[in-house]
Image (cartoon, rainbow, N blue to C red; front, side, top):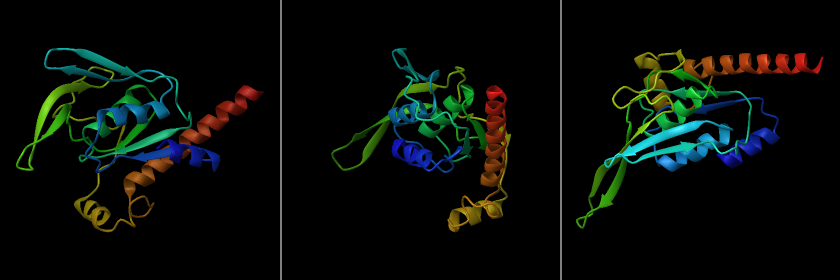
Length: 194
């Protein structure tokens, strides 16, 4: 992600669309690291384990960009992708576009068993900066853009449609909002120069 931001910035990108749709999550610390690439300051996530040990993670002034950011989410965005989306939204760093996320507000540790199977154990719960319990509730987008079942099927089966204006209404709306944010940012900079 860091390399992608650097390359796109070098290519004169004026904003970013981060697509977390269909992302079932991953590692807690990966979401924290990615949030830090976009957020200069603010709380990213709070975890509470079984013994009620409370741990907060913050941005650490290592943001790679201040350019406008839109994040795409859907009902299949879960876990670490929800941590990232909620942190960016609640710190006013990004607008979320799409549909309500899955709602997996738990951190799990996977243990390998001798027969080759695995056991996932919930070791903590996580909360976005607001402290809201998103488990089984999800994160709501700022801008709701639902897809019809036909659009969902087409985007899942024909990946060439994803990220296009004609085949992906969520992406098209994200780009329109991003263009608006870029225009506002550029107008504000021009006003400051006067």
